[in-house]
Amino acid sequence: MTTVVKTTGTRPLPELTDAPPVRRRWPLTVLALVFGIASLPMLMPFGMGPGPGNTGLPDLALVLVTLVMLLWASARRHAVHWPFLIPTLLTIIAGGVAAIVNDAGALTLIKDLFVLMWAVSIANLGRDPKLLRVALRAWVHLGVFYAVVMIVGFVLGIEALSGKQLDGERAQFTFGDANYCSNWFICVYFISRAARVPERPGARYAVCGILLAAEILTGSNGGALALGVAILLGYLFRLFREGKAHHAIAVGAATAVLGAGALLALSTIDFQPLLDRASQASPILRDSIGRTTGESTNSRSTVFATTVRMIEEQPHPWGIGPGQTETAMRVNQETYVREAHNDYIAAVLERGFLGGVALIVLLFTLLLKCARIARRDALTPEYARLVPRPELLGALVAVFLVSGLFYETLHYRHGWAFFGLIAALDLFGRRDGRGAP
Image 1 (cartoon, rainbow, N blue to C red):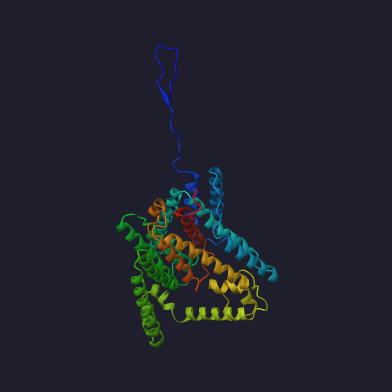
Image 2: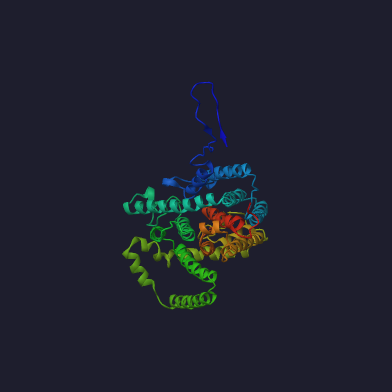
């Protein structure tokens, strides 16, 4: 359509055409999404302590991301989807019952809802493939940037950048916990491979190398074990997805035999002298593989035995209260006072049998979503271009399952944001998905 403006002068004005509306280069939704992802590691930036109730910058960012997501969905008249709501409600109910019975641990229930909102916000913004693309690229680019900063800080001895432990050589970046930090870099590694970001293979290999180097500097043995298991599972999932089930079974069987042989060798051969020599050769090795025997193993065995005994001695089936393991150990005057360091034991010990049921429902929901998006041709072309290898997201879930044996990973903020990516693909990316607009 063209609008002609007439005038009484001798020279007519030029014709005016309908111009497209001016669009902002960086919409608020994009800025909030990138800021939210960038904030995820900032739990204790530059050595600063956590806020009240162990809060941090990611919690402030979550409030912003959630508000922007609600405004974005409302403006487009999109229904807000609540992935993982049922298992989270079960977790909160279990924790609420335990908190009432023991009169302790109610604050943790708010944290349960907070981490859920990371998944809800990322999943709903993922309705728009462009925003999902922004999230994936931001995760990888920011993750690599943080890895480079941590590595440079470690090499140059700048502890404000590396977050190196005061009593060791393990790098923690801004997490305040080396295992938490390790899990973050592993997440970025698998997201980079699943989304093929960067697109050029050479650049992607370099990115993966940087991320693996950062993970090594954290000295997390549990993280390294989970990474190895997930890489193997990712390869097996790919074979199944390509219709090579017989190859996958053969590789899986061979790996099981080799794994059994390795366990047998570890139980019969004394590797301690080799570990001691390796520990003396490098401080990094001392604080990683050097901890596979001795104090670290003994302390975890003590915590495991103590928490199992606490479950057996419970007078009722409701648990001791969310987040109350360390407090209960202190009251009982245990020889080694620590948190549970195990998602599965913590769920039952602190929230009772209802907590165990809630955990099972959560894991079933996660694995079901991963299975649905990983099938061949399950995703629409638009979403398949964004995540060409969705089976690797299932492998990343395995990282959390394995790590949950050594740490309490199910309250990791970036973990729930990652769960939101899976939910976005399941809700809006599948060809037979019902949540798509």
